[in-house]
Image (tube, rainbow, N blue to C red):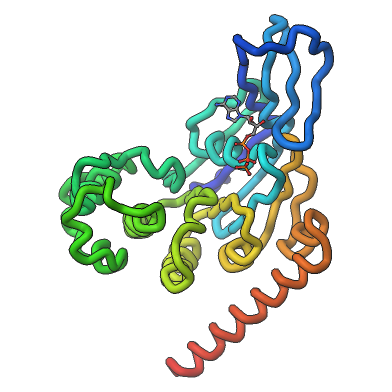
Length: 274
Ligand SMILES: Nc1ncnc2c1ncn2[C@@H]1O[C@H](COP(=O)(O)OP(=O)(O)OP(=O)(O)O)[C@@H](O)[C@H]1O
């Protein structure tokens, strides 16, 4: 039986043709320190091979973090999973309602107020105006933006925009949540609150895929990790193990400590609530 919510990609590639590249002498795929390989396709056009041979299977309850160098392909993978990019080779099958929290500008209008943007972003994510109106007070409370919600969005800082986007996304029950780096722009206290909502959301159903350079955030939100290296999957496993292989033992210890602290905090909250 096919599960209702799931992600399956098979040998998926994403290539960007670059028609104005000045690399006439380029014969073979070239690998730099940052970025995907630069090569040529069958029509001899220069292409950036942002993702190569990505085979990945995620099911309900999976919370996966993406790590890797600049230009490794993390954001491209999120866009592939969001259906923004089609694989140029191979296949990608996404089942479930997807909510991407990146490109914070998408589905938002800088000239209208925070309140109006909450509605607009909800519509962009497939909600009706009526549904959004019934949730708007709760979302407004969650964002803690107060009177700023009456102000045009262009007056907001990055972190304030992320608060708005997180409020909308966690209120609409997406089945697949795709988060990019940008959410690191919120302060520690808000992150704690957002994490609780995200955890609850992922528990209710759902899959989380989160690309970040912050091991702290990764440890807080994910339970497995995938190391993307020059567009390919280098390693997929427990978060501590993958961060350790990518960054070394100190980073792995930081992850382990963060997980222990979270567990202790959850225990304390449980005891206080009992
Ligand atoms: N629209 C595009 N056109 C051409 N090349 C692109 C495009 N988007 C991404 N790339 C290339 O694809 C590769 C992967 O980029 P991507 O943004 O996915 O990396 P990333 O792992 O998210 O990096 P970072 O950690 O720096 O955000 C890079 O080589 C980049 O140059």
